[in-house]
Length: 74
Length: 401
Image (cartoon, rainbow over all chains, first blue to last red):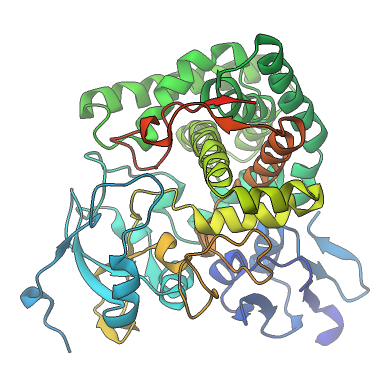
């Protein structure tokens, strides 16, 4: 069901490595060389990734739906 | 496997704070005993992690919990154990509360406050210049600047600062206040914020407390009123006590490193990089606390931490880790790679980090640009440092220019 799925991206230029997203959504983000990175870009819709994107102190995380509409951060 | 009951715990902090100097024992421990048993002034014994990678594990790994500290005699610097706040929560509880305010503290939102913060800084310097030297940088600059900003953000009357600034000391006090005073001040602070919450409900305004009240009233299933009050009080107190202390600390470090200061003065665009280095270099805390409790057996620094054991991560020690920072004890304002964790790491990473960065950049930038002859107006040994607090800082900082 990839067509209904979401996509998560981390802007490596903006990420400050606070680890906030990894703590909130460990199933979706991990730290790599001090910066956050999605474990998989395509994810099933879940509130957890929205929480992570909304709470990122530098808004480095974008969650988009299947037609590229930005879901979070709002 | 180390039997923890047979290892003598070191008293922690290792020594009485000496200005902004970090105890050399941290460097030795990073080398020979990266996870060490410690005993804080209050609460049970703990492990202390000193290496950058280990501290990040303790603060960032979901196998370590703050919620598990509730009901334990948590190792701490303060007589009173603070329970029930956002710092005693794990995701998803923690996320629920943090999201209530996180939007107001993102880099983008904070950037919108920069012009106003500059204006406040300029006005404070204008007033200092008009009155003539000497001036106390703590009272006339470092204290009013962050208080004015957090007041405008939250919607707290600046005119009441003499009240809540006194009460906020309860958050950072170890022995400067008695346990009864700490409780009284916290009650006063919560009562004061509770009253503001009621006012917002009667008459909505355009500020963060009002936004919190509206979120609470729309989603009563998600937040209790007490949580809203406690969080707002925490934002008010933590939102200025830290920057109030760090601004003079940063100024002190710059004025005692004249070559570095000259390098900074040469180009104002260097201020943000310099602030990051100062965040790394200045050990704000007298010691670290807020132990994370292992929820399962985890190996840290070559030691198997057992489920249920508390581990403290030393931010100041991690920021001097020689495997991460070249020449870590040297202040290098132009340091290019600087993954310091001065604002913590993981879900409890300082909520106000971007705000603090901006205030420190504006504050230091204004001092450097507008007071080129700034100097400490008394011999260095005569400076008075605060005591009985969880933070290191100057009680007063007489300066001339």
